[in-house]
Image (spheres, rainbow over the protein chains, first blue to last red):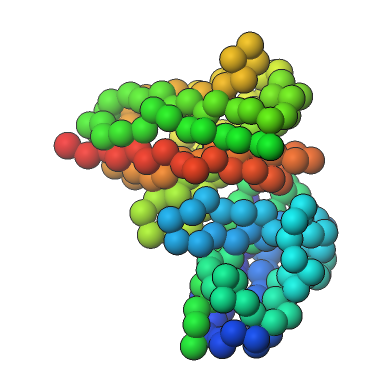
Length: 108
Length: 118
């Protein structure tokens, strides 16, 4: 089973700042990594798939990079609606499909 | 517009059974891979099960294998998750998802809460 480790667990930033979230895989997942955003009381939403492709309707301030075992989700300038929990997920080797533990982006 | 509407959740005793349904609309249901993902209260996301388009192949997490069964009825555009021998650790919000490209959870339902408690 591929284990995904996200860091940091919590990121405290102000609106307008740049957010950099990390996801590290226990073995190579090539580029088969996705990122999801979840707000309180809501279902997750797909942001990025295959490491760097934005899903339909996702603003350009969200970008993904990386391959192999190290991946980054960057939010170039935080908007108030971006404060949420973010999860990475791999589909390289499954079952099982696995998620990281999440990074909470909170308002500083 | 893709819509996924789960139903069937509720309170059940340990050892009990429950069937979740997910009514799908806005896309060609029979041609898509569909999955269930769950989230225990205050915890992260956990993949539960996936079914291929037309239901030919199913996959399960080890934690539910032998107790949960995923199925689909293409005539009703509905996905199901039959759960038996439920345990306290199965308590979670269960999300129905439409998968893109196999293993990408492109669309999510609003979730259905299953609580296993005596």
